[in-house]
Image 1: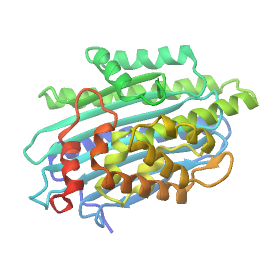
Image 2: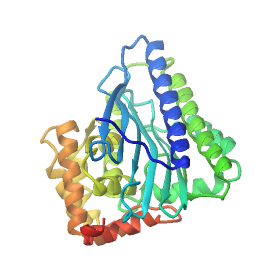
Image 3: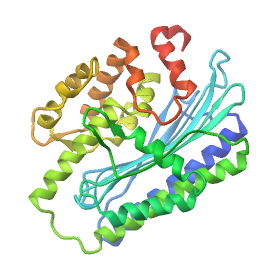
Image 4: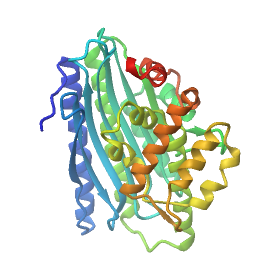
Length: 354
């Protein structure tokens, strides 16, 4: 089986860009593990969209190691060059999430993507957010400073969009402490925009690795209080991803050929009882979604989120939005809801037009 790449030159360049970021991040993480004399590698897993006819991707993943509890660095490219009825030409992305084992070591999420329509219009989506269970002000300032240096003219807008996107209304708080988000970004200068996307990705990757190196340099055995704080935060992360994150939801609704990869952002363990305490805070019909997610989890404490559980959770999300397509409007957003999302609302109602 072979993945057929997109024909567009911009899609080819975007693939090269995100693949370089993937290699940079995986190499940095494995070097960090080696420096701590930890044998924890990221294994390549390939997936195919329609047996490769419409692309696919490769993710490097690790789980339940001495340094990282869960990690996924996924690059994908899906295209519809052979389908004239599709408005979407191609979507090329790197989506990475790292959840370290130690509660003092922060998680991170990084997403850089290029989406191109058949009419030639396209845009970049750039996201980077630092997600500590126990906040460290110096690390927050360091992460923000790196992104501001990479995107000085866009930083204020990206910070504001990120704070809107990662706000959780039901809990009246944010996921994470440092947010950067540019949606639907296109200045009309393709080379300059690609350079910005690369700069943002490299800044987020390199700064996160530096924060990890500093945090883990002189670390001690975590306390029970720190472990509980991490479990509670990972539960919050799980909650935000599966009830609000537009990228996760859209990815699950478009197809079911990479469910495990799409759910790679989920932490290894969550607190099922804590999730249950949030059901009554949810607006309808999202209370039904949360309750169904809880029912898909095993009855244990802490509750593991393994491969089988991820598949069950993906099915819950897909069923919910096919039953309640209007609830997609309740997903998180920055300043702009892209046309691909609006189109998908119609596709849920009328699958034959997808």
